[in-house]
Length: 335
Image 1: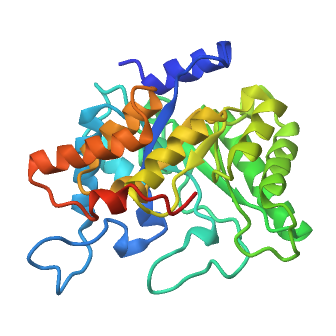
Image 2: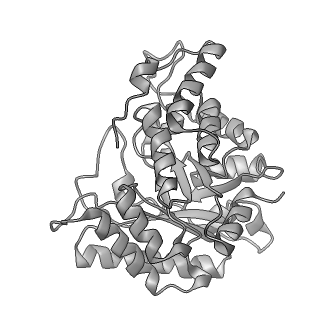
Image 3: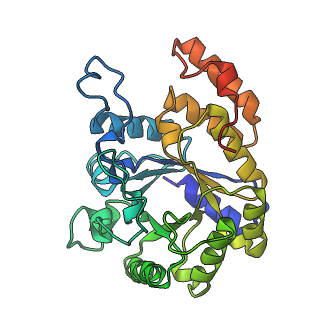
């Protein structure tokens, strides 16, 4: 089945003025948060086991894929093996399966330890072969069993040795990916522990995106970008520099419902063409209803504040208790 991601990427590249918007669910949390990634356990065993199970995490991916409103389902390699290769849930779906292709140290965020105070270092648990086929040695035919799309992330910390090493690892990945017909999108985080002071972080990130892709030809370029949303000025700066970059935003921490809806709406207004929300979706009262609202905002069918009210109405009709009152959920706390 034709994937909505491929259709949208083609349309955007042919005409950057089209309104197509790529929406992804980032369910790769087991590679960063460990046992806490599925979110809080709401069942009878919550006192003994405060977090939900990996199987519940997978089940939400099955349901969201069946719903068909996101363009990408981002997973870990192990989860993708189960859902993409073994269960084949994407075979008759417009949703594209994707896998986190590297796990730099700054995403090691389990509650038992936290590495974010140390500058990011490059690392890859998964291999392209395992993402594509589930094993290290595979035929060309077996490469089509799994995912052909990965997320590769880099974090620059204003240190020539560390940043050069990150670029070297990214370069090695690109060459391998091109040889194995593996596509990727590039995530550029804000500096997590800068070695030297950075006066303008949004400009620093934009400069590194432009600089690191300046030496990359079209055969190895990322499909699109994933980065923090730094506000209108930074987004417009990147779009004006090169409309072909296809910038996308990451969601960050959960926040209020209005935080999530407003971030997507505003980022699109100033040039973003994609959004990848993880915790904002995973911690919603009802993930399917929440995604339905995100899709409506992304497709210019509803404004953020109205979407919050509509979402609360759907929760009430379904008998689902909201995390916050409507008045509290209409507050903006992250912009």
